[in-house]
Structures are given as structure tokens and as C-alpha cells.
Image (cartoon, rainbow, N blue to C red):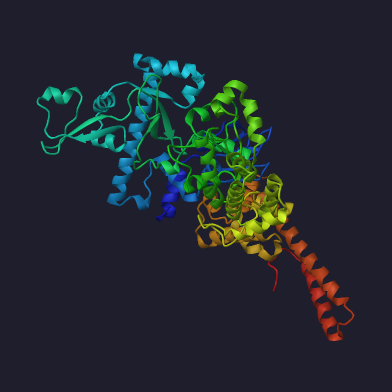
Length: 628
């Protein structure tokens, strides 16, 4: 996200975003003394170790050690960048960002707000039509025949658009919406007419006419007599619709989807992601299916780590969105030829995003929806869990669609396998599947390797790194976690960040070299520098500037329980003295080792003995900054 965010605006957004209210909208919080607790949303646990401190405006999990402020929580829970988290909280608090204050940006933001309002209100209008109006009867009957429950209808906010050319037009006029704006939202379509209506009554009946006789426009509804699925962005805001034809209609288009608008780009939207993203993060992989009803059946059947591309083929942008939540996908498209071909076409984009790929094949003639209706959600979960690797699937697919007993068929299988495997840049995968291909074709593996080597790697996608990465289809190694600091150093953090009035004393008595843990040393130095320079704001702002999640976790762990400590200055003096003495013990051990070296001359040994004596005297002295 481009633009400048001043510290003042960041603090304004933070102040308007109470961490208890924000986190409470994501997970249920329970009052526990002065703080709130919950089951941690970042790791699986049976007893609550997630702690929210309303006084410090921070959170910390004592199980996985994740912690931070309200920006950190939204960023990590939604798996988005920091500035995206800032924008979401700013929108929630209705605070404009600096880079949105130009006239053009303000107009754009105003238009987007209007479009979101139109979509939200129209969702409610179509929900009511489905639930209560005679115009929604056919849609109700259809949903019942497909086994869609009332819970699913409510959760996914399914609605029905009446069979009328002007129902939405009239609705928009009754709500005082500008019809041109409603057309921009894609809900109605404008068609120029040669002349204005013959009478005022004509205009009031079913058309809206604007401008003069040469520029008059007649509006009509885009969605008519269809089952309506609201399409939401990752924040759960309705940004588009998909209308499914109902039985008995003669329309050749099974689905009519919203056109692209200022709030909807179909290549960047997944149906269901707003509801499934947490399940995807928990499962570690995303299931990708084709349609809304497939997804709803899976979701209601208990398999919730699932999304569906919206009205378009799978794109590179779809792959990058999935990569924010998981390192692996399981493709589960329809069992017909179109669905299976779509699986093969999606490979390039998935590999470019460095996603591991498996394929779950639903037995013909089923799709995921009908399979779950016939066999249940657990059977579908088992099918997904046993999904085979993409290249095992591809080899079977190629052998099923080409005659492996003919030269032409074998050459086609070899060429397609080689081209797909070369895209990974992974030698191990290439050799593994050369062996499998040879076994399947009944030929020598060396011959297949030789043929594979003749095929050049296609350049159909651009990798983000400079070379092959063995993690493309096998997942990535976790970063090593830094070692934890000593209990004394954690206690120092607790005293310093809870009792802010002690910072001047610590600055006068502590030498940063006494702290052995480099990250603790860095955080203490930054805190004392902020106190000395008068730049200290609050703990939440300090956490924003921490360089790593580990650093934030250490601080939030230290201050999660911020009840007043007895005699904090005495405790601080005690822990500082212990840190100093530990540092001196390390010095004494190093000096003793040097003195014992046999090659040391007498002059050097005498100098080291004097230094040893000086350090011993220092250890017995009162707490003063270490001399250098």
C-alpha cells in the first residue's frame, strides 16, 4: 500500500481501536480479573492461554508466545501486511488516512463506501425476498431440493432476485440511490434510448431517464429470477453477486456474475475466503473447488478450509492470495473433462507462488456437493486427506487420455510430463517421476530421463527467487526460534515496561553489556533511549517498532500480568546487581583462563593478575556503572 502514515494518525487509529473490542469481534473473550482470556487463535489448545490486557492494550499467548498490539493481532489473524491492518482498523474507526486526503482519493473512497452500502442493503433485500416473498418460492424449492439448510442460507446470506426487469431499479429509487451509481455497482444496466419517454408516467413506471433527449438512458435489472450468492471480500463485506439460474428458466447462462467494479476484481476474490481463512491457517492447506454450492456443502459438512474462484479461471493473483494463508493446496474440481482440464491449467500459477499441490478426484459423476450428499462430510474429508500429488495425478490423467500402447500416445505422455516437471526446477521431483513414468509405460528409466532432458524448461511463469527451490512441492522449513533469555532478563523487562517511572534509575545504573541476550539488550537500550530523548509514547507504540515477532512476544509475556509488583525499585536494583555480577563472573572466568596459558610471558601475566584483582574488587563494590 503506497502512502505516508504519520505517527499521529497511527496513534489516533490505535486509540480508536480498543483491543478488547477488536479481538472480541474475532474470537470469544472471557473476563478474568483485570484481563481477558480465550483459546489462542494462533495455535491449537484445549485450555485458554491467550491473554488480552486492556490497560496496556496488548495481547499475549503463554502457549505459543505470540504477542503484540491491536495492529499486530489484525495483521497476524488476517495474515495481511501491516499497512493493510492499519487500513482495516482505520475503516472500522472511520478515520481517513493521510494519503486519502487528496480530492481524487476522497472521491474514490466516497464512491467505494456508496457501492459497499448498495451491496449490503441489496443483500438484505434479496435475503428477505427468499425468506418471505412469493417471488422467492422457486428459489426456496430449489434450495430444499439441493439439501441446503436454513443455517447455510443464513450463514452465506443467500437470497433471491425477483423475476422482474425493474425490481432493483425501483428499489434503488425508493432508497434514494443515484441510479448511475447503482449501475456502477453492476446491479442495473443502462441502455441509451433515442428519445425520452412519451410521458411522465412512462418514466415513473419502470425506467429512469437522465439527461436530454439525445443522452437519455433506460435502466433495467442485471439479476432477474435468480438464486443470489453474495460475494464477500476478506473482511466479509459484500462486494459482488453471483446469480444462479433456477430450474425451468431457458437462460443459456447458468451463472450471471457482477461485472468488475471499483470494489470488485474477480481475479482477486475467492468465494468463501472470509469464512474459511482461519480454518485454512489451522489446517495448513486450502481446498479449491469450483462452485458456490460445492463450497457451501463442504463447509456445512465440516470441511471448512475451502475456497472457490469467483467467475473466472484460477489466476496468479488467486495463487498469491492462497500463499498468504497456506503453503499447500488441494484441487478438487468437477469430475468432468472441463473440471479436470482446469486442474492442469492451474499448475503454472500455483508453482509460481511456490505452493505444494495435490489433487482430490471426486468419483464420477459426482461433484463435491453431490458426493457429500451421498456419502457425508467425513467421507469427503477422507477423500481430501488422501489426495495424491499433482504429478501422480497428471501421469494418470495423461495415460487415461492418451493411448500408451502407441508411439504417439507415449510421446505425448513423455512430453507433457517433462514440461510440467521442468517448471518446478526440482531435480529430485524430475527424477522421481521419470522413474514412475518409465514404470507406467513399461520402458527403461534411463530412456525416460534422456527424453526428459531434451525438453527445455518452459518460461511460462516468473519465480520470485533466483533459482530452484526444493520447497515448491514439499513445504518450507520453519525459521529457527531464537533462544529465550534468562529469568533475570525477563524480570528486568517486566519491571522496566510495567513501571515506566524506573527508566531513569535504570539508565543511570545499568550497563547494557551486562545483558547477555542480544534482543533483550536491544529492547532495553531502545526503551532507555526513548526515555532519555523524551520520545516514549506507550507500550503499544513501542511494540510496533520491534523488529521481530519474537521481540514483541518477550515484552508482552513480561507485562501480560501488569499487577503492581511490591517494592519495584528494590527488585530492579536486585536484578540489575545480579546481571552485573553474572557479567563479572564471566569476565573472571575469561581472565583466569588467559592467565593459565603456559606461553604467556611474565609481564603479560602480571598485567592480567592486576586486572583480575580489579574485577574482584568491583564485584564487592556497590552498584555503579561498570568502568571501561
